[in-house]
Length: 178
Ligand SMILES: [Zn+2]
Ligand SMILES: [Zn+2]
Image (cartoon, rainbow, N blue to C red; front, side):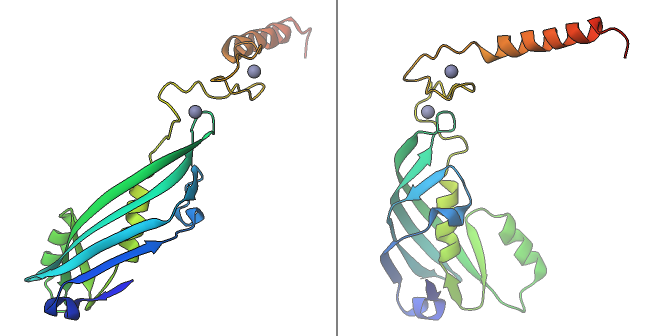
């Protein structure tokens, strides 16, 4: 969505829409699906810039980092940004200052594109390692059984691999000649 800032000078701009975003566009394999996104906000003129306030609410489905089970998570986030219009004649020093300042967005020209703001929020709301529960036991690396539900009879892989490594070392040492 494009907001014409010239018009915002006259009166605040409001939007309230439902968006659908394909989860693949976010390039996070753990993000399985995204429900309809309620996306609403307002841009007002605050001399010399503009003030944007917006809210997103939706449901996201992530796969558990350990057991791959889907986790449905209601998600909500608020955005507040000061929008400053950067004129071609603006001093370079001023630009650097804005970049460092969190919550300030510099735009060129008289239009504001809201899409990158929405996408950034979706990105920020994806946790690093989603877990279905804090103590998720994950899947057995040998048979793939969900250890939260069944105790499989596989041997502990750590002990197993240690013995295997030792046996390999032993047979190499015992091998006659080369
Ligand atoms: Zn899990
Ligand atoms: Zn197993």
